[in-house]
Image (cartoon, rainbow, N blue to C red; front, side, top):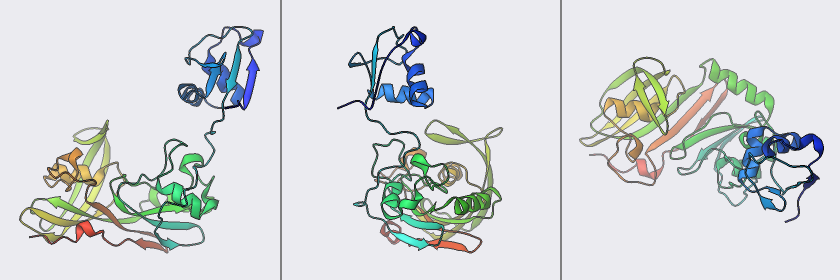
Length: 288
């Protein structure tokens, strides 16, 4: 593979670390330069080298083809995309379970955003740009349902302002373990610890939720949730804390092994924008 950049280390760069020089040469952050070096996109003397390698005068540094941080994700027209609502500046997607909202690396091609780019190429560069182009909010990979992307910066700013001002109304449906009955309002402090989120007495972020039983069974129940805030894993962690973990959610105590957890983003709305996604088949199994 032919390099896209190649240079010989001059006196001024001799003695410097490889990652520092690569960052300066390419105009990227040191963190991104280290990622390129770790991914063997940088060769020193024709071979991959460690990020902290001290350069010597006359060393040959070659940069293999790479994606810049601002480059959008690759379009994937082969990925199914269920459009719920399309307006002049926003599009709502019915995201399937098992699919990430957006890629973390340019090599990823199977996220919702990869499909959105293929259908709506004008999303590229919107808002944060790069691998987060047009992302208004996120859903966990295992959560299905309504996911919104902005197709221009004005729409993104309006949507983010609605989130910041708590004008966004979101309803979820969860299938949970246990006999959940009635309604309850919760206010908890949640703190992220690695992959999990836990309830704490001090610190953390305030998580406000309203739960209402739709169907109450002996061993499982169907619950509707209205989120007042948007804390990571808010619904899953709160339901587990209350003693009603989401079915299939092994991270928070479910005893049922499934390819997904049974949490679905049913609807979202703010101002004159609204979208709703039908319940997947897994939620329709009768509850006794």
